[in-house]
Image (cartoon, rainbow, N blue to C red; front, side, top):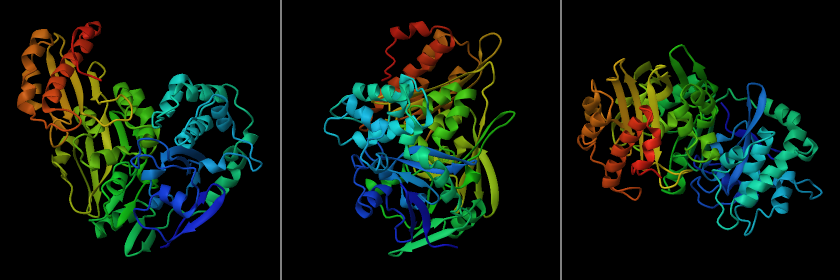
Length: 489
């Protein structure tokens, strides 16, 4: 057992054993290393001013992702390469091509958000030779600018990727072999426990040691992506102790396409899951594209979105409507259950002490079935759901409803199926009369709350309108959508 984590910061090898379990990467960079180019804007992973790159060895290659340093904890950095804005320019002061393009196309005014934009564009520059405008806009979903506007920034991105210069200008490409060698020298299979000021950070070496550690410390906080837990610290000022970090455990990051569905490890991030889910369940892929910004999707995990039990989590309604099942693990072994039964009440799940979500199985929709998921939020990108609705429909040969599973988020204390609505539709002809007669069944299923995201009346009306939308889309009447006030932003 070790008592220090090791990582590379720009070009500096770091061994660290004096940090707390809730110390953020942003504070470490700014306060301890005086790397102040990385800014704090929102402290909740929304604005992107704190964007940095984190590289990790994956399947023999070195992969970099943009992340929000404000909600990324130091304890998650073992075996990584952190790259900040200070690392991009040459020692002679010559700007990196991405930085120079921002200057040339006037992509900055006050400049506060500029380092974050540069790092997001740099991440895209590293991973895509000829990104489309849509790719650029997606890469910038997690970055907000209050004064410049986005068009000059997009033109800068298009310019620098249209004629990509020599990698000799780039510190990562130039030093990639050296960085890989240094990362290979950091052992990842040893458990690390760091004690500081009476608090403990636990980084298990493998799944077995994680299971044992959580069994011994069932009140510990498990942190995978920290996109939710990070806000407990930065906004609610909660003291967490001990904390177990699992973002490095490869056993929880597998995705397997099986005969009847997809098995997803609980530690798989949204970004990792996107390609597979978008291929086999396209509507699910479109949903993932609206979860946070790219930085959040690079950090947040499917398992974490389930395990925290939030009634407005984006993925549970879609997973419930598809009939997903969970596998839970503890020192006593494993057990499986339908996902819909995992959510018991607000803040309460069917999970024993020391038991954690290990993987999720997502069945494929039948070839002739219809599946759709709709996220309603105040803004399209990088916003929390006011409500989320998912529909999975199987029609019989005569056009009657053979089976239907409907699940909502944001309508109750937990993600929940609309049982009365399903009953009102089962066995009926899939037509306008059936839909109109069934809409009011939603009032029997849910008594939503009014909060700052939406009123109860808005949620109920929108849920009914989404049923109508799903009907129109599945009955070949999509062109009629403009005739309905569907209440979607």
